[in-house]
Structures are given as C-alpha cells and as structure tokens.
Image 1 (spheres, rainbow, N blue to C red):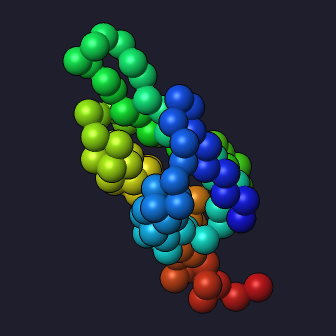
Image 2: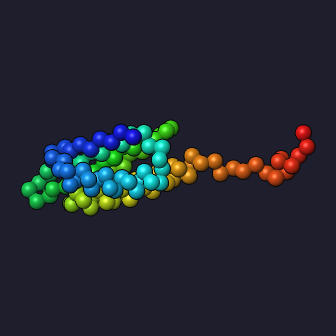
Image 3: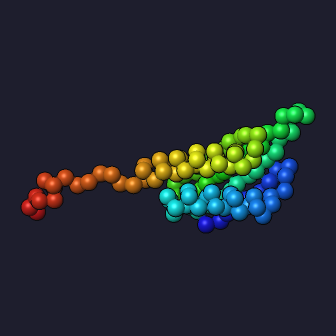
Length: 112
C-alpha cells in the first residue's frame, strides 16, 4: 500500500502525519485490498477571519477510486469527519464487492 500525505499552503508536521496514519488504520482494518492512498491537507485563506482547513483523500482500491473531502475550521476536526465518511464508503464498497448470492439447496442436491 502506497501512502502519500501532502500539504497545500501548510507544512505537514510529524504529529499531523502520525494523526492521519492512526486514523487510516481504522479504514485499512475494514478493507485490506487498498492499493494507494493520497491525502491532501489544505489551508484556504479566504478572508482575514475566515480560515478554512480542508482535508481530502483519494483511495484507490481494486476496481474503484473513492474520493472524500471535508472542510472545517480545525484541521484535526476535518480529518476526523473525513475518516468517518471514508470509513462508511469503504464498508459500503466492501459489501458491494462481496458475493452475497448463495447457491440454492436444490441445485446443490440435484443429480448430474
């Protein structure tokens, strides 16, 4: 699994990097077929008092790319909400990928 954490208009500190990695452990625990993860942390300076922190994740899994973004006034809160959204989407993708169709008992018992 390749993990890329980058920052736009901010330096990604080791504490921030560690925080993102611990949050991603929950996602990879649910679904281990993750190929590539790109995390982008952004600080948008809109006005003097409005500073928006944004976190984005692009998760490449077999057969699909999952993209999630979330904005907040606090970067850590944005990361928390982002990981909650990502976790829900990964679980939903895992349910779609799994084969829930079982062979009927009549077909299993049928003579050949």
